[in-house]
Amino acid sequence: MGLFRRILVAFDGSPGSERALLLAVQLAGEHGAELVIISVVEHLPRFAGTAGEVDESVRERAEALRQQQERAVQIAQEHADLLALGRSGHSEVWGRFMGSTAGKIARHAPCSVLIAH
Image 1: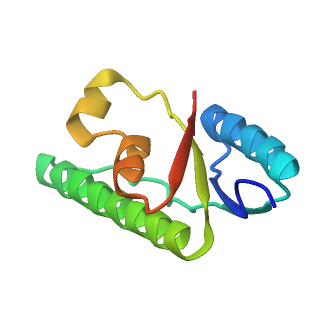
Image 2: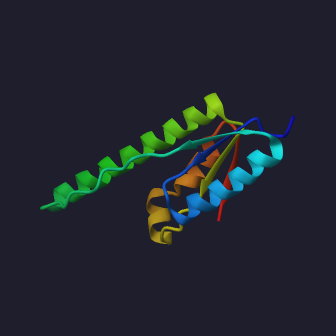
């Protein structure tokens, strides 16, 4: 039996998630692990008419991201020995403002986390 039994990959079609998927596929093959892929559908943003609507949109987006992160952690806890995800490469300003999704998941995940760069 290999080091990992189940590997969960967060895949959104981004270059980082593709790198994570390739690494996860390779690791799954080497360890005889089950590979589980999770994707989140994101609704397209609407254009706000006022500054208040922009603020509300930012709050809604932050809450949606928080819920996605909690769900990923829950799924990892229930199903995975390793969680693989890609680094998005958003700007430093965005990362400092919101924090990186990969970093937050790595801090809270109940299993090992592989972050593909």
